[in-house]
Length: 265
Image (cartoon, rainbow, N blue to C red; front, side, top):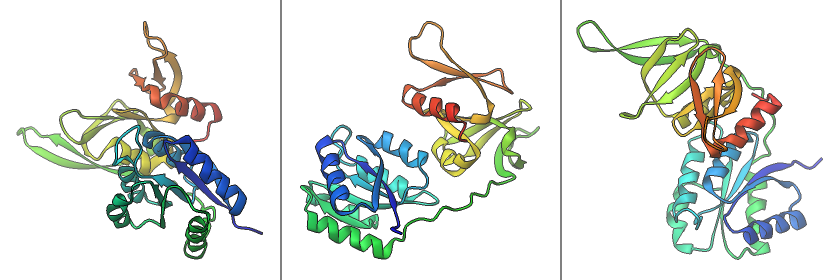
């Protein structure tokens, strides 16, 4: 039986994606393209939507964004708990120096050459075994350190051990790189260190999803999705254990709908 490797292609040029897909189909059918993206934002969403992927073919210079978009995405991928391997693809040889600092599995120049692709994928077969499904262990408690102000107007750090089901949603503080965690008992834990993205990446398995640039939600707490009054194609979610209604960013709407439709969270 042939070990299949699931991959995502990220390139803003349609012809380049089609060229790579053609090479894989003709010469490397064990590399299965399960998704593709034309920009880093869509790519990041897909990478989190398909945590089982083995690798990413990543264009460095995404012209629709900026010359560093691919590198910035690669740094984010490398920070993941289980990061897929990366094969950089670019038409600009001068980007190779910084790209190699990210320890990619390989590096390919456009236009793609069949022999060079063969060499890269043969190396991956030897060095990067196909991923076997892993049993996901869901944490029973999340340890959260948050800041409070005591009676003497001094800051203190408190530690909470929270059942993940108690978390309704999380919002980003505007003034600092900290968060507010809103619980089902209406308690709010403020001054929690971290970012929305970090929380989503770490606890996707628990059903947390970013639905706006400033907040993410516990999908098990979502009661309904409805248009915001007077605004076409702009939505908000109502929650089970909170009177708050959260705006949904247009770029997150499709993923939210799909998650709620399939119930896969």
